Image (cartoon, rainbow, N blue to C red; front, side, top):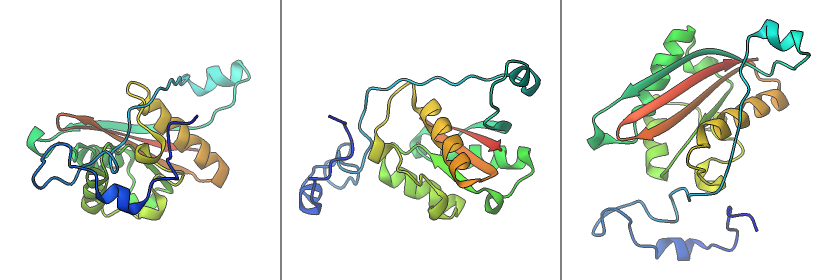
Length: 178
């Protein structure tokens, strides 16, 4: 059986779940957080000329990347700074990006990042994110990247942004072009 999603879960069941971190008034529960799942991923990177020499398809080009850190007390919003830096390095605005894959450990974290970046939520995690699909620790970066590249390919999109909250206040982002 697949570990996610769980279609039999009701709103009533979700409302009864206890907060994970702040029992008295917390908002993060097992129902709005990503599950830890089994997973593996691999990505092959090389120069375009080498890929052509080997007869391999070029799925996308990395335009820029960035890492950033914020105070750990506001853990979860590291992707905001990382995305801004990656977009600046690419010479892009967020409005120019066709698709975004953003890892979300917790729903509230994803909402905060989206609100701070003011991105179009219709472009984000169009096939579901970590809350729906699971969070394979150690493979999430590749999972996000591969999901983004293949959806860009399906839609004929040219610009994509991938981002993760790394924990402890860190964020990472990468811009891709097809």
